[in-house]
Length: 241
Length: 340
Image: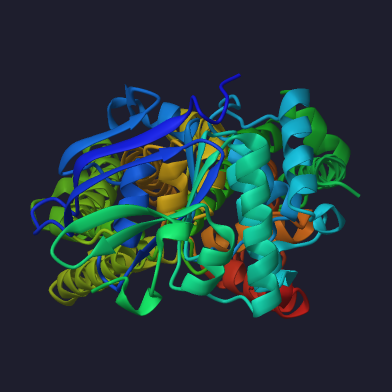
């Protein structure tokens, strides 16, 4: 197994956006290491979600490269990317008729057969992820009956069940109260450190990020991108200037 | 009770109901034939008239009910998942309207050139036109979907295209002569009684092949419940699967509509009934249940159509709507949290 130091996600001169449209952000160069929780911060419309979707393989880079442990991520088949990068999106899908266990088990999609049958190993992984997120009491509950915070944990457990080296989260705290936010970030940091994962979280909540993340990826106007260790961040008011 | 156990119980109950309804559908008819004679006639023994009625009329009709029930309920579940919309069905995409327009062109337009005098040509023309009508609309919807990337936009486009196609159909009806209009109106009421054994040789392979093919899509359909972005992030080629689902739906609904007319309600209702019975949306449970529940509902509706006896057979669409809609309404209200 690779140690945290061995795992790295390297974005090189990455240009992101949608085909046939102007790029959303150019020249993103940043290197993230395993075992770290990083925040992704930028003003609205700067391309946080676009960047996360591009890393996750949902969008192709317009130019530049995304390397995970020296392999070019966006050249891999979609299913291979899914085994290496997982994402939790802002949107909250309505899942009537699915239990928490069913939702988490969807994370095993890249590993199961054509009928989605779960092997013993799959069930073990799902149970572990459910326990890791502390939602074992909810596993037979219908997803529609969950609070926003509980549902967020379910989606994180689903992403963990994909057993990827990289976990991306797009504004996971948008609808959470202060306590839930704090608990979520504690959980994410613990997962990053104990599982040697690279976790990148986009958020507008700078104070919570600074309290829990190891560093910040900052997207500034003028296509300026930089990585700052948490200790290096000075006045948050001036961060985007 | 876990989903797997619940599925086994529900599936077993549905199978028993299916066997009972299938036999009842053959027993019921305008001519009263005792149950024992029905069974004997099915195996070719007994009174020659009974054998003729059972083997040439009632048996093909029951098989048609089974096939159309399977086909339409599979179409329904595929559409509902693809659009992530509980109101989706073959009608919403305008696919059935396309099939109906194809049939209208052959039935009404064909009468102008005397096509109805050539039985084989007329019949096969209806089938081909219906399938092409369904696929034609699908091609238009697909072209639109290349521009409109989200499912809601595609759904709206489907409704609009369906409206245009229905308007063209009305225009054809307006200019048709009395006889061909009457034929088309009767076909439009939907019936499974006009399908004979030779028609079944066309209908059965398509329905069986495409309906069972849907079983291989269960895992992808489950992923699609999370939405396109999530599905893609889990390794699903969304565009490719979307195309496959649309083709399966188009062929199933085109072929079924050609032989049975545009049957209402089954496509939208049966998937809901299955989800509520199984208390899950997982396709590995819902699709197999639909393959049995769809035929059950169709057979039940056909039995009710026969109830007045004395040679009177009620229009199928009237019964599918009267029987089905209240069941769905009841279930939706009772389990509104589940359906959301």
